[in-house]
Length: 299
Ligand SMILES: Nc1ncnc2c1ncn2[C@@H]1O[C@H](COP(=O)(O)OP(=O)(O)OP(=O)(O)O)[C@@H](O)[C@H]1O
Ligand SMILES: O=P(O)(O)OC[C@H]1O[C@H](OP(=O)(O)OP(=O)(O)O)[C@H](O)[C@@H]1O
Ligand SMILES: [Mg+2]
Image 1 (cartoon, protein in one colour):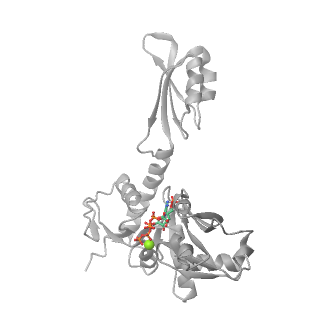
Image 2 (tube, helix red, strand yellow; image 1 turned 180 degrees about the vertical axis):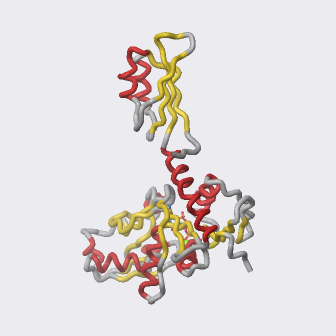
Image 3 (cartoon, protein in one colour; image 1 turned 135 degrees about the horizontal axis):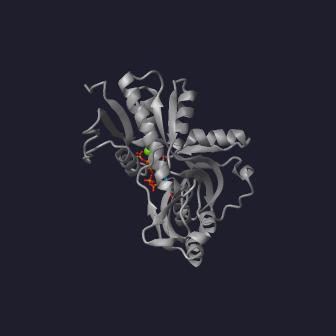
């Protein structure tokens, strides 16, 4: 039996969310040794156990309180919530953070030759999907009488196989649709990965651990979007230089050894510095313009 004092976290074993979820855990200070065949991984520096499962099982594991936390796509979470609601099962959980990976949309797509003129074109049609509850909600909201045909994979081949007239599946770049001669027509749900927690009180030690992790997650996400910019600027153009620098906050201006008319300017920017702006800075007489990634941020 596992130790109930250890925080239990469910992540997708192998798929679109696995690498990013593991990378996030590592970035917030969880040391992990993942061995491919082992379905449970123990953190080596903290009381944490990782359960590596299919993503379909993660919402249920959290909602049933089998694990304390789960990393899951909102699409899968919403689908499982609707499924549980329909069968009278409990579906409580808390969303702790919306994350910066796993971005995709659930869309209805039709074969290129389908003469689509809006949702009413789906009247009486069959639509293949892995997300029947989300799809049926969309049909209901749009007063369309269509049916969802459940397929667990390879949904894109359904129209060619004669199984359905259209499909409803996840899209990110659109390359899979294009490769299968399909055209995206209706976006029905936008999704990102989220970190969810089971409902109810957690033991004090687990709650404290989670409370320490959340600012770290924020720091990691913020750092990915931010840049540290350093440059040398002529004192006379300092105001113009400052106004060219993107993002918030006042830059730090430091004297440069051996130079009376040039200063060093440092700024943390919430955006990157574009080549065009760097060219303008250079034209003002700036030099040594550096744009650097930031690994972590706090406060
Ligand atoms: N093309 C994509 N781009 C970005 N995120 C995606 C993409 N496709 C799926 N996702 C997100 O990643 C999640 C997992 O996708 P994946 O294709 O790995 O699932 P799966 O085939 O159901 O895996 P499993 O074997 O765990 O059931 C999806 O539910 C969605 O939230
Ligand atoms: O718009 P695109 O960028 O082409 O991405 C969309 C594809 O990505 C997902 O599948 P995935 O590649 O994860 O494989 P799977 O079918 O095995 O889940 C999804 O089910 C689509 O098939
Ligand atoms: Mg799945």
